[in-house]
Image 1 (tube, rainbow, N blue to C red):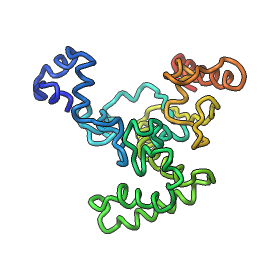
Image 2 (cartoon, helix red, strand yellow; image 1 turned 45 degrees about the vertical axis):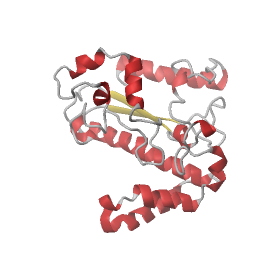
Image 3 (spheres, helix red, strand yellow; image 1 turned 90 degrees about the vertical axis):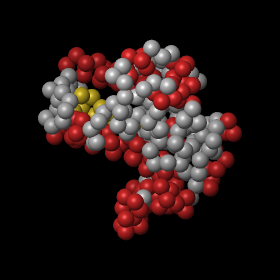
Image 4 (tube, helix red, strand yellow; image 1 turned 180 degrees about the vertical axis):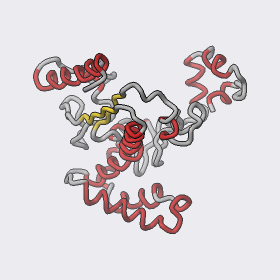
Length: 254
């Protein structure tokens, strides 16, 4: 899509070289021509394209096929936070960006996120009849029952259920499937789950860690967020998290 918007012949053997010669500003303008918003609001897959789903960089149909073609002799470290999709659940820009009904919700709409809306998302977006056929309704009911049984929070419960579902579909399940596939292929896989809720980054809608909120332990915080203090509770967490990566880089273990 980017190549087409830039007027580059996608079938050209020089595709990579030609795109490298294009400036970042030209690429951004090209992307804007077919991606009006950052997220695919209210869809199951959040992003418009990525190496895993566009089929251009990785021709393999599944991550498992890709794993078996990769070098599994070296150990790998993978990780997640406990609620990845918090970053995408609520629209922080208000009227400056298009809000959704299920994902990228306007803050004023949060009180309206109830069981009906959660069920609608599962039935209309996730339980695709083209995929599940006559079993779509049974599948939808199983998904709804699973999250109602396992999500125990009392504050913004159905918003949390929606966010957990989106986290599972876009982050947790793919990561765990890949980790299992790599382990089956003989690779040493180390996996972490980051659950420390730093008060500096805590969402007022969720008591959980959002996508990328563990990264300020290693780098400066993103624009608009405070850096981590290297003392006290957050300092202890930062030290342990950094040591995890240093130890893995040096020794290949955790």
